[in-house]
Length: 309
Image 1 (cartoon, rainbow, N blue to C red):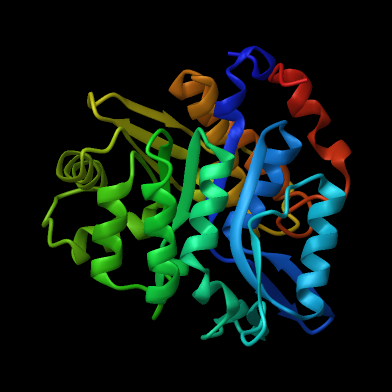
Image 2 (spheres, rainbow, N blue to C red; image 1 turned 90 degrees about the vertical axis):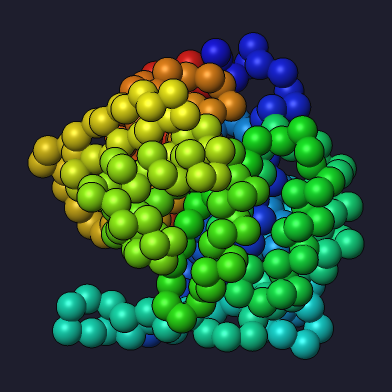
């Protein structure tokens, strides 16, 4: 269904969780999955509302400027007078960059009441959330409040297993709250062990997840090898990777894939079309530096070809 023919309410999307600045030697780059996904959704004509918390510092100013320039709402971006805007220290390593996610960041202390009020005001068609921002109970309660006050919304869980920042209880709770789940193939294998499924292969693990947690769909991304999806009716859809993609870096490609997956959910695209479009967009992101393009013109071909103008 074209975006301009849909109920306006389904275009409102809450993205709950972390905003992170990747601190490279040459300077900070703003990111974090909720921000990256929201940035793409804004460019695709949706109305994303980021529910997060930053410090009262220059990184907050950088984030707000980026969001304002992109036309994104900042209503859900809380400000903390004590804790800093989330940071990830990036250091060169033998096998590429090494990332250290710092503890006690502002996104660990998202205020539940303010988050709930933002969610109620937005009346979203979908709520996107992950597991990293639930590492602190304060933000965990904030997510519970967002979900409690948006009963009409579909829920997409983007699992991100970052050692040591997750607990089995958080994963289980998140799965019980989700309608749709996105994982990569390594995370799917890890989930099988954490949940003691003792399944023989990835598809059986996916089926167990769908059955145990009453999921509607489970999306498994495989990087350069494509992706596959299993739904509650046991329909399996797979797409292969795109050959000969020029790669500058792969930062944020999974977030780009997830953004297009959200479009497919909200606009009721067929599964194979959603995966093909998400794969094409993620591949294009691999051809630029960073998780989000500097120019809005990057999106023009997708807006035109997908009838989103």
